[in-house]
Image (cartoon, rainbow, N blue to C red):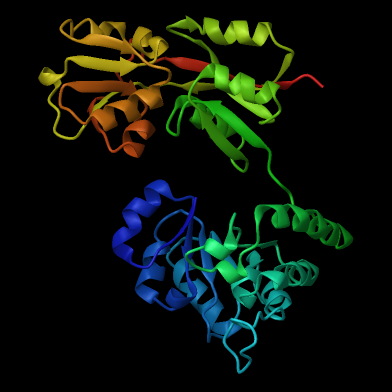
Length: 360
């Protein structure tokens, strides 16, 4: 997720939910914002201002890096000149200049750089040929109906047509424009399978599917290339449903990882432990927490598809009588409070996750 920040007051929520924080052209010299962004670890996409020089762009970058955050990406998105045929003038000379005087990656935004959809393809080719590390292209399924930036947007089919051409240009320069594999994991964001997938494939595109069967179906139907699912836990044993799905289909396991599992009792803010009457979670998570659950005999245990989905359900219910057993990340993503942490029966609690794909 990439989102543009305009005010330091939003920094906490951006740090939680955004993967790449964008500083737009209008805020390139918002120095207090830049300094705050330098104190977090998230990568920053810094766009050049409309009327700023290359040197001023790099000086703005220094405000971020001087505070400790070295993960900065520069972006040339067009500057204002006397020319009014295009929305802006895309300064392609900035690419080799920035590559020569800095070590930072450089992206180019031909959509904002021209404001004209028909210019996106030739300007993207020129950007790659000039040494850009990537391009930012505005895509809309119906540009004529877009509420903003319609004239500079291309359709998904046009994007699919352009990308192979850009890869050819990159190949001529002995470079590659890679498209990361899409990987499906069991659960929603915040599930332990999500954590396993992120650890194994930090640069890949990840998508969560609520049920185990959904992950297998997506891989078998070639909608997704790779799946990540849990197969065994040290306390709860094998995940029988997953084992059967692996055995009964033409699949091959290509990787695996063991993760330490800490289960949390999570609920809406202000919930008292004594008021909880329903606990939602995956059946294996409930098995991992038998000792703790035995201290709450008044609670009804409700099996759910995954721990993260259980957390989302409790957040949606938003009552003080319901809780979920889930990860700390699932609690944070669903804005739930941790009522009791590390409630698994043993501290030494691990789950093995496997990575699988269709047999070739």
